[in-house]
Image (cartoon, rainbow, N blue to C red):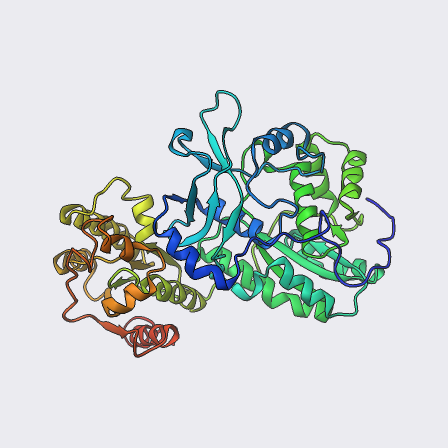
Length: 506
């Protein structure tokens, strides 16, 4: 595409709009904001909106400093520009089902699918996304408290500020970004290397990861392949970074809009140029109904050079060279139980990654996520709690029956319900892990604000406060979290599994 030189600029490029947006509240304000959030109404964000929030909070979507309001949303849909005229191709809104449930001026807590507090939003606008659509959105300033780090290769999911710091510490004068590592590019990295060397540039492999599940074995294998191959292919002249980018797969899922948003992202991460292969360019330009000349003009407006060498032609995507280390091993279920806030999910997530490193396909069934999807509508009566546990157990038993690994993290407070799940599994495949954390410690953590609300009488039948928790009598593994770290707890489980279930991998 463009053959214009990038120019001589030191380190990272200037962010789009001139400065990186930073919505993260200072650490000194966290305690007060957490206390305030415990008394606010909550909005549980989808996985996609949680990812957009992370990008907004860290400045990856600069100059956006919030989910779009009505004027920006309508303008971007029609013209690919914000209401102030600045180019921005993608409408990013915080959708809600019922606009009447929210009022302007209110402050609300934004939480993820597991009810962890992410941010506090002051509602300035409640608007309908398109006349007569019945779909509404909220907008207003946000104070972000917790930006969730991905579990898979978290050290490679850096913020724009972190990547820019790395680039500024090199002696590079320009940075070229790439966001594909598949097809012909993966087979012929020397082509990319020669292209970047000719530009005398540092390469930023800024690779998008769509909706992430930490038990997605294929995704894990792909990310591992990229991280292992980078140093061999490019040496120290490249930086690898993953970006959780929640693309919609509808009409706007391809085309010029997507390429232009990629260009803005790369610029905010520090890139002066954007390298993509010709076949992909044609696909995107055709899908977006925009001429190449128009696309180049808009890239120039963003101040990112579009680079498309003729010999970077894409071939169909191929399976990663790094093959899963799978063996014929029987399935099993690891069932985490413990008080709310005991640390079940944290250990379960770490264990999921470790087992995938052993070559096992793992499905993680987290209690909060199951409540949101599989068990929506159930109350917290004993009968409905048992129903919720049995539903998780049924799904886990099917996974085990087909040779998979099911990791379940649920309070499951009643011993009889846990024993029913044990009986669903083939003999010897149910591993009960009791995360033994004292009630006082759980209350002190209270990351979701639930204990505080229960103590005030705002939540009824809350386990540990006004509903009992029946401690397991003979769990396969007991983790005393006051006596061991998360890593040591994970190691306890792995040592048990090595004896009982992972002999083939040992």
